[in-house]
Length: 330
Image (cartoon, rainbow, N blue to C red; front, side, top):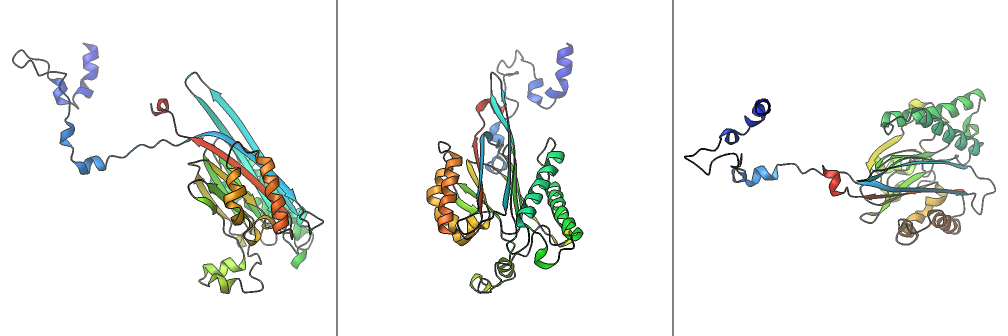
């Protein structure tokens, strides 16, 4: 009796379920459906939302390499690569949890001590996330705070040493944070991040902070914008100016298919080098049977022959995902 009383609020939602079988109508009773699907018209059915479960992370790999380039004796690039993986296995399921922090900095050409600027900025960023990355992927606001902290470290040093003009240290930065299938990226300057997938090919996700791009944003044609002698001069960098003059760009993305992320300094990306490699070397790097470190080394060797005028640094991040299993739906 108590069980029936506890079911009363639920049964009130389905009036037909409250009708007990009667002798006069042997077809009536609890076997009768509580509602008729014929009562729904097509428009109502179309408006019912479809639940789509996100893909699971299956594998995360990363590799990084740097080379001074055949025309340079000193390397002013710097990178940080940190990947943490943990696996949970149960009789019903197996899941992978992952965090990855990837930072690439390129000391500004023509300015003093670019190698100091790039390493200080990257290490400041790494220390910030080591302290502030808690349970969740750092928010866009937290990523901005990290970039401002790196800028402050360099700016303070420039001020303390009374550096002026091209004596002021500066660096670009591009970074990526991954937690499972969530991705947050940010950049200042002309170091880039690309994404390669089977469905979309090679995509440049960052926009260079330089005079040519700024003029295009203002409505100038690309041909005219890059006809200027200072078209490739940076409009933003870490270190030379106070953070109030800094406008980092932060993006949030979701990994929905097997993905290769490729970060590079301008020694790698100049003169559309990566675009020429999209259907050959880069496509191969998406294949998980390919050794990522060896493939990246081959890419840098080719870049040195193609460009070679600057330091060359690359970070490759390979992410494999799969659709949730049937058991994950319940």
